[in-house]
Image 1 (cartoon, rainbow over the protein chains, first blue to last red):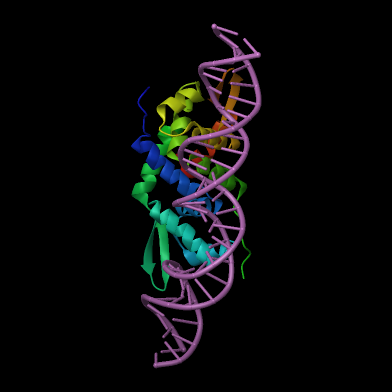
Image 2 (spheres, chains in turn blue, orange, green, brown; image 1 turned 120 degrees about the vertical axis):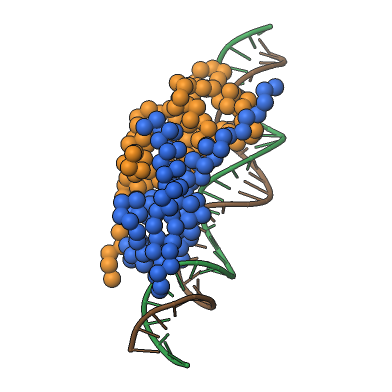
Length: 99
Length: 99
DNA sequence: CATGTTGTTCGTAATTTTACGAACAAAGGT
DNA sequence: ACCTTTGTTCGTAAAATTACGAACAACATG
């Protein structure tokens, strides 16, 4: 009877980020935001074939995972990468993938 | 009225891999297998605090995503990284994360 | 102050995920 | 043949995900 290991904190955090990346729409948003500084969700809504409420849910998930952040710029909201957490995600995946 | 873009194939494939990575247990398995050549699911079952049927489901998801493969070595099954797809995942994430 | 724009929240529904134990199948050893 | 080991599949249940439209809130503009 061996002791049951629990997954490490790093694995949990990496899994959390991976889960947030685990949808094409969210990958699209992340890729956009990591390549240009910012965007407005209206722009995304114009480009993506989903209801704006659905987009809002996806953005919320990315926010909750800590990968993006929103800044009010009335009447719109400007979304950017959360640089600190993005950096952490980069490092976690870099280590994980041995690259 | 702008045309609705659809997410790219790369984004879909990266999202598929990310989704498979989106659980601590699956991260644990992938990390183990990417650092050592292979393992038997019995070893995993000993170490992880989940039912073996649950582990079997997680392994199936990793298989379905193409990240691992199993080879029968009776009475056990030897699991390894699927090197080809792992390489693709590495490249996709490398590009995506700019690393 | 009324109106329009922007994006979130609510309500709902269908599907998927996660988890467990029980039952089963495959194969080797006795 | 019987039993043991190994891992999958089945049945089930609870929770989470994905999606939509309608309603709402915040705020700027006419």
